Image 1 (cartoon, helix red, strand yellow):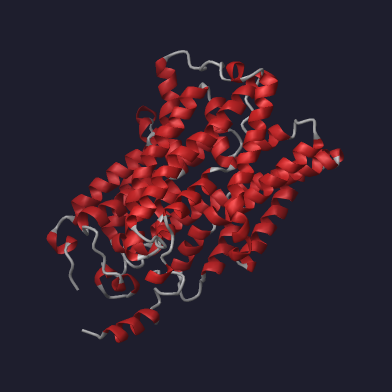
Image 2 (cartoon, one colour):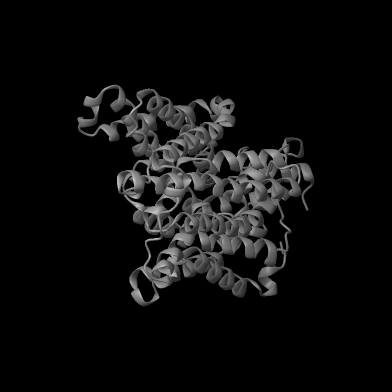
Length: 473
C-alpha cells in the first residue's frame, strides 16, 4: 500500500484532478447558516421565479392555486436538495466528482454534461431577459429603437458579451455586488406590486380573478405538469448543490439555512409575480407574465429606466452565480488537465446561444411543459441514482482518494458503471415515452418523479449484489 505522501502525489498527477475539483480543505469550510440562507434568497429572488409563478396565472390558475403549487413544489425539491447536499458537506467534493462514485470516474461525465447543458440553457434564458431589458431601456430613451430590425437580438448579444467579459475577468469582480442583487429585485417586485395595487383598485380586485378551469379534471390536467415543472425549476441545483455545501462548516448549518430560505423565499417572491400578473388581467385584459414587457408599459421614463437597470444588474449577478459555477465545474470534469473552471465558464457562455432561449420563453407552455418538464426527465433519474448510491448502497461512506484515481475502486468497467448509465436511460426513456404515447402522457407530465423512482429502483436492483455494493480494491 503506498504511503500517504505517495498517494497524494498520484492524485495530484492524475488526469482526473485539478485544484478546482479537489476536496475543500477544512480551513476553507467557513459557510454558516446565514450564508446558505442568503444564497437561496439571492437565487430565488429573480425574474425567472416571478415568471414561473406568472406562467401559472397565464395557464389559468387563480392566485391561491398558483402560490400553493409553488410552495408544494419547492418543499418537495428541498428533500433531494438536502440529501445531495450531505456528501458535499461531509467530504468537500463538488457534484461532478461525487457523481464518480455512482457512474464511475469517466462515466460521471454523462450526468455532468446533462447538468451542464441544462445550465447553459438557463444561462441563455437569463441572458435573453437581460438583453430584453436593455432593448426596452433603449426604447424608452429613443422610441425609434423599438422599430429597429433585430433590436432585442442585438441587445441579447451585447448582454451576452458582458457576461462573457465577467467570466474571463473572474467572478470575484462581482462578488461585492452579489449581496445586493436580491434586495434590488425585491425592490423592483415591490414597485410592480404597488403599481398593480393602485391601478387594479387594491388587493381585493387584483386577487379576485377566478380559476379558468371549468372542472376538477381540467385543473388537474394543468396542475400535474405545473407541479412537475415547479420541482424541475430547482432540479438543477438539487444535483449540483455539493458545489456549494462543500464549503459548509457543518451539516446542521447547510441544512437549516436551506430549509428556512428555499421554500419561503420562492413562495413569497412568487406571490408578487402571481398578484401582479392577476392585476394585468384586470388592467389590460390579458395576463402579462414577463415583467420586462410590463415595465415597458409604464408611463414614467424614470421608473422604467431605474427598474430596468436594477434588473440588468441583478440578472448579471444571478446568471454568474447560479448558471456558471456548476457547468464550469462540469465541463472541467471532462478534461481536468486542460479545462479549468474559467475555461468551463467560457464554454458555458458560448453554449448558451445555440440553446435558443427566445424559443424557450415563447410562452408558458414551452417554458413549463417543454423546457422544465423536458430536462426534468433526465435530472430526476440522475438524482435517484446518486441518492440511492450514497445513502443505500454506500451507506454514506466514500473513498475520496479513489474518486481522483484510475484503476481504483470507482473504476468499474474502464471508468464506466454501466449499471448507472442503464438505470439513467431506463428512467429517462420511460418518462419521455409519455411524449410519444398519448395514453401514458402522465409519465411525461410527472417526468421528474417518474424518472427518479424508476432509476432509483433499477439502480438498487442492479447494485445490491455483494460483489458490486461492497468496497473492494
